[in-house]
Length: 319
Image: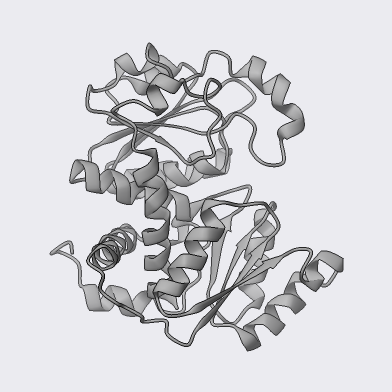
């Protein structure tokens, strides 16, 4: 654990909280969750049985398809001694017009926590506002905080620090960019992104990140040129060009992003020991070349594994 943190005070302050975005969490709380994730990972690797959520149940509402999110939450809840219920929109009355408020109030009577993977971020906010149990944002069109927490856990494990490092994000100004940018600004990191015109990150998210950066000594650069973004980077990150819900724009986006592929030529501008990261699923040959994603600097599968440990930390802390 970070020696400067009052661990007991932080732990008590997280109980019963929602986890809707890193924007709602103080830098020391994010660092606490990363430390907890690393500790839970160590326990699991050592075969230690640790079940702080024994007898508790997590409801998992999915309006979008999922591989890593569903499996990692379900396995994580099991390892923590609890039980997870998968609830697709076709399985519950929300898919037939029941309001989110009514769903939240009923489910709160049965469950000890909920996650939701959805399109509009307002659905996450409304669920949390109406529920009386903690709610976790498992992905919305605005943010993907569970992924970002796992990403920064991975960087910390590989680099031994976060503050002062530079992370470059190349591609669409989407939910992934937003969460990484907010996280970097709170953790004292230099964040640089490069997106083509028309695909910039949300202006309000950028404003918030720069506000946090002023407090932590971080730096936030929103750029157009990917070569400028990756210059002296410690981490290079990308995502698919057409996220879920934008598949019909695939051809149009391929044209817009053709100069934004992370490939062997682009990464020459980064430090030689840079980490390549991708939230997956990846389209090899589109947003990233096979040589980079399968190369020696790639940590995509360590990163994917850490979804399990980071989410176990979130559930342990708030549930």
